[in-house]
Length: 424
Ligand SMILES: Cc1cc2nc3c(=O)[nH]c(=O)nc-3n(C[C@H](O)[C@H](O)[C@H](O)COP(=O)(O)OP(=O)(O)OC[C@H]3O[C@@H](n4cnc5c(N)ncnc54)[C@H](O)[C@@H]3O)c2cc1C
Image (cartoon, rainbow, N blue to C red; front, top):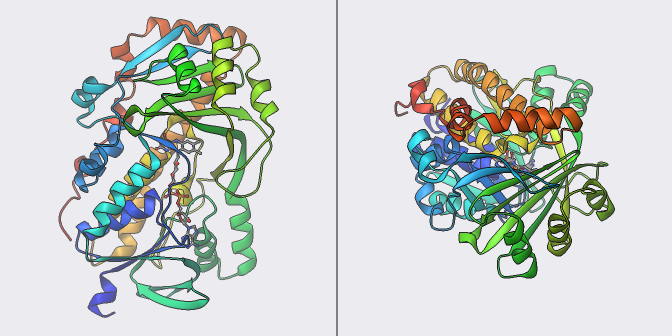
């Protein structure tokens, strides 16, 4: 393999996972070609919570300093009963989070995160980003992998020692990786069909101007400088400030029917209204004033399928393990995936296949634990009757300090501790 190809990384998808991977590999001296099917890089959805395990990596990659001016550092995560609006629990964030986990807890508009990633990318001459380029084929070879990208009606081939599938929950690379492993289109199709599924949950999203009637309705029920989660049987809503506090991001979750394979769409608003039956009148008014709501079917990916192939394909982010957003960790896991993959590959230049296998083995337990935490949150937040009473009692007896300590394993996680940050 010639020297350029042995240092060439190909990435399909320029979402949070792909952009972070491009920066992480370029930081270690690799050449990166990043293919994005969309004509322009645009953020899907409105707000995002970035916990310290993610911001620590963004700081190392030179992204955090570009994000901070637009982001908000919330003072706390607050859980409230949606019927009474009573505060059930509070986890201190702000300076306390930074002291405890050595990196800030932030909330931001997704466009601001994407802008910060892109600004850093623009400074890296070794990253070439091609938009309007859909990766639709992969040919694995003994020492390198060839990706076929459709660009303006033409098929363009690109070779490298590694192809990273960062192409989201409906990943094409996941299907092509299955094909490369099985050697049969039929097996690949069945592997793909089994790997992504509708979770049964809809996310409803709205962004409200702080100065609007809905913004005032929000101020009446929540704290403008916190991440507030309102809990109710079969429904919860997360609300937090974005865009330096000029707007609030609202995300409500209900059961629902699946929709087309897209990030956003419209569903019957009566589903949301029905799920809110019994919540406080002020909260119901906020939800009414905040509309129209965009509905978002939550799909997950079966984590049991392989994330890497010995032929040099690796899946990261939602392509590998899309999870329900109830721990607010999908993007954080994508960021962790990207940084750790670059670290392990750089630490083992003579044997990338061994590095991929080691990376997958290292990532699986953590990603599975995070997904379990999300599932537990959902159960607890939608609890009914005696279970809800027990939850409230548990939360009342747990001090804010203890609630923060419960998150040390998640937010205190640090890739430096894995000792592979040697330069490529
Ligand atoms: C309601 C909701 C709230 C959430 N809140 C949070 C939160 O607060 N914190 C958090 O950490 N996570 C959160 N998440 C999860 C987070 O949004 C996702 O995990 C994250 O965006 C996944 O990023 P990704 O780059 O893996 O995938 P994507 O963002 O889907 O990016 C994939 C990219 O690949 C491109 N692409 C697809 N196919 C191809 C192809 N064949 N060739 C080239 N390009 C291709 C797509 O156009 C896209 O740009 C939330 C999710 C939801 C649904």
